[in-house]
Amino acid sequence: MNETISTDNFPELPLSEFAFPGPLRDRLISAILDGRKVTTTSLALEYEIEREPLPSEGQRSVVVDSNNQPVCVIETVEVLIVPLGEVGYEHVVNEGEGHATVSDWRAAHENFWHSKEMTDSLGETTFVLGDATLVVLERFRVIERLRSTAN
Image 1 (spheres, rainbow, N blue to C red):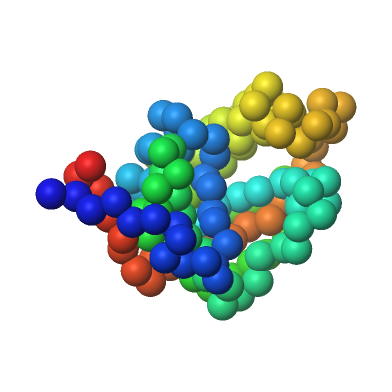
Image 2: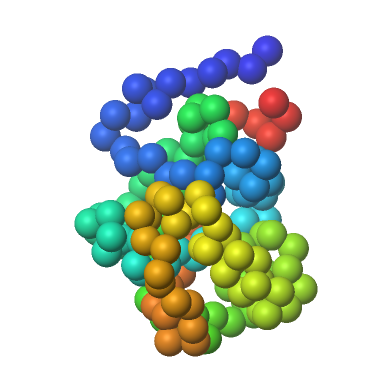
């Protein structure tokens, strides 16, 4: 029997939402819970538009699934802000999405960042991605599992 844990159990922790609810988020959650995904990438522009502080080392958050149910607590262990053109292979592999090359990873991320969901979310459709575009590379670790991968 799987217990559903409410985010009300962690009112002091912010939520971490990987991608948007649906198949991509489900795959990312699986990769986090099985240990394949220990890094993530965001556009610095996202934080600027949303007026949110950048993640910081030691910050903890509750990861939620597509049904907004908590699955684990993660802790940020490293944050780097780099130009998109400088993202390296190690980061790509540690994202756990199965990309064989940096260029495959970049194409998939650019497609996501230019998706209707993302541009609607940001309220911004005119941004241009290039080698100099700043991205936030975050390394994290799972510190508490709230649900198994078998749900």
